Length: 362
Image (cartoon, rainbow, N blue to C red):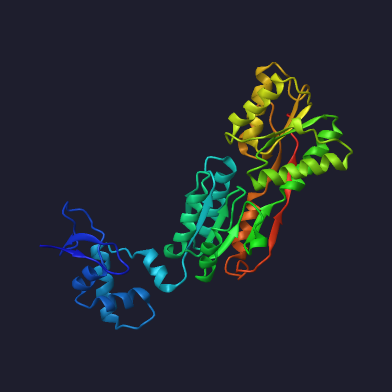
């Protein structure tokens, strides 16, 4: 005899009275099945699981024995929804294939684990409609927090209602890519403009002007911040900003876009002695385009990337780069969790310093 067993905080499955599924394998069972095996009510099983309402020692032993025999596992999502306090954070990433995002996800998972929290990962694939859908679903997922890692310049108007609802439901919301503190979202971001200024100053000191910039300027808040740092540094040193040397990437995101932009610039006969790329991946493509034309790096053209990915030290020549301190960023986010510092109306922006690492490409 089989029965469809369901409970508000359990897996719904088809199991036999002895707790096994039709294939004879261990089944995902419900509180009802545990109660039947222990000879108690489902409410008593819930009391034993919750640990807040006392039960007799004999009853507790019977319930725990039944749980062990049937292999019962509570539904954590439903449990946290009832408790009103989740144990998972959602990391919403624009593109998981970008190297720095993979580093962020790994570091965040490791540090959250130390706090007894789990990480859920959502890949937006550069789509704002996916972000809106995730924000609208956030309250139903029983989340402790929501980490936004999208560099795109977005129309926030349609997103704000869902964000406010999440905050009102007790979900802590952080931005870890761009500064959204003006919208009441606590932001923990890198000093992208400062890093770009240091990179440009280094190139000027080694007489590598004119300096080109390649990155997403019109559609990415991070790309724009790095471009602003590049532009301000040139002006601070009395250098002109040549629009023909600002390559705003509109297609592609990584090495292919850098290769294409540098190839087109060389084909047009543009004169430049160095390139500041808004990511390490872009820098790799730029360097490949120069090498394919027989140019020497850095003698003919110097290159600087952004991010500090591990692979940058193993290309030849190794990439000089602005390193992003992802460890410091994740530590800061974790220290803010539960401190009430991501509430609506907050104007906090925590700026994480970057580090300039000189290698052979510049």
